[in-house]
Length: 147
Image 1 (cartoon, helix red, strand yellow):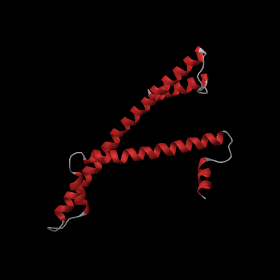
Image 2: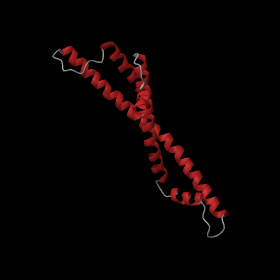
Image 3: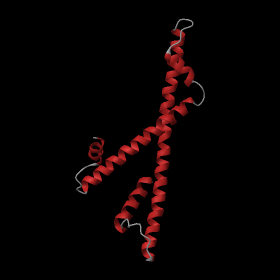
Image 4: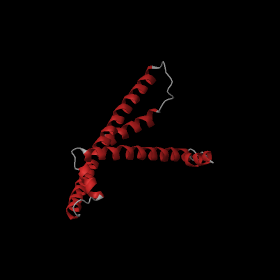
């Protein structure tokens, strides 16, 4: 559904044009701007829902890994001599508490998605810049500014 909404919005913007953002007294142009904004709102929230739904399988994967680590920690604790403690046993005891797997999933998912979005944005900007025939790409520009 989100892909169809996105495709419809892109088609609408290609047919109507993005506009320059200026306030117009022309009713038809104002209505087109309103419809474009409304479509952007629904498409944006559609993608928020897609992102939210991708968290569930990621959370399951983290929970599986946590359960595996807890089981290995318990095995290591049983195999260790009395009084000794292994890193996997300590990690297993820490993660065995309720909610630790979910906390770990959130702490990993949010930064990973942020980095992914920034990488995609930079790549799309670079492709747009190249398609318009601009000489330097953003990565080359940032490297030259660092020197």
